[in-house]
Length: 338
Image (tube, rainbow, N blue to C red):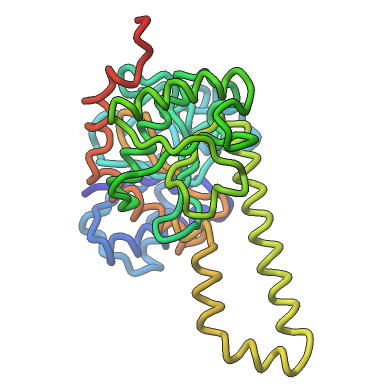
């Protein structure tokens, strides 16, 4: 397995990116293609005492920044680490690509360079959020602000395949995010999407569990939550904010008095496990589902541990056969009017 890494993308690049990649080589046995300023990457590899067998460094002198226009960044900066990495993936120089750089630029670059799976209208960002035994996938979470019912139907299929192959859900339950659980809730988009998802369920192609409210996203009733990118992004950012607040508030409670500190000591192991289970960085990043080859968007603030997790996710994605599943069933994911 060979993973292409945008070594210059992210808040803590390239140091933390290279550290995470070297750890992945050691623990996962993957070969690496590190893309970025060659002299800097090679110096970091020496510092990490990396085994250079199975590591290729490809020079790229430019970097896509958060200030760049996402819609044109990889085209204007053809020598950027992100653009070069995507070209390498397109040309078969690796099995998957990981970047912690600009989400918009990566999505646009992957769409234009690597291309979508034939028949897929839009690729989607699909993070797995901490919930229950397997987690819950949110698709989409920001790639497509405006959606059609057909987009949501395709998101449901793609999310179902991902949940089955990577999350370990035997019969993934699909929920349509809405303002109520009743069939008649929501606007025109939700009504149309509901009808399409219900039909796919009746045909035995997916397990559609109906509408799900925001309060039901994390209660274990569904494995995949389908929504438009605007709503999904608000839910994602709100969830991350609540988790941070809760952990800060909990810490404040345990440091409030000597008795509370003693209680914290007794519960330290359980609290650590709870914190880990709620940490979105444990997953590593979000899959760009619908692209013809595996692309993982790692968190922009990725440290070495988080980037390692993103590479682990890329390996699982590349080995899963999800892209083949989508390609094989694309006829059921398109409206019958075509």
